[in-house]
Length: 166
Image (cartoon, rainbow, N blue to C red; front, side):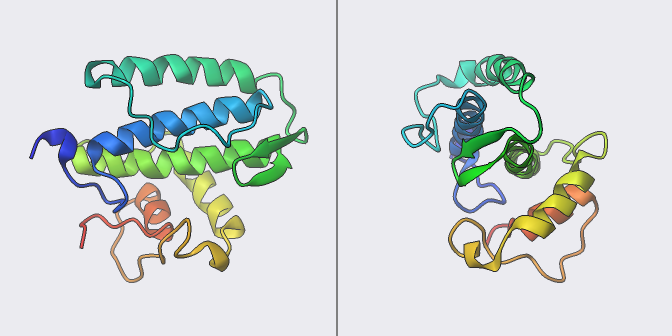
């Protein structure tokens, strides 16, 4: 098994497919900000060569900042999960990115705490908006009783991601 085939705390992805999913998330976030339908955007981008994953992600992040900056918090957009405010869409994409960033960091032995209190904001938002009806569909059951070392890990556990795969 190569490093890119290694497991992650998100049981849906190995390291390589998780990287492709993070790139797909940025593509969907960019389209949402530009008010372009996201239906045809893959959840896992597979056509980026391994050597270009980091630079592709960095380029997309610069583009997404530019696309979101003119939007006001109350502006209406259609995110992949449905119509909402620009603020709620940005929060949803941030929760996704921070959670899968934790998955990637844990899987590759990197520091896994999100900077600047962002995980605290993501956790309070996620607790308030993730309905039980999405458990088993988009999110696994929360990890209960696991000792967590950070708010970032608490967020990941809320979404059903475990430090050790089953």
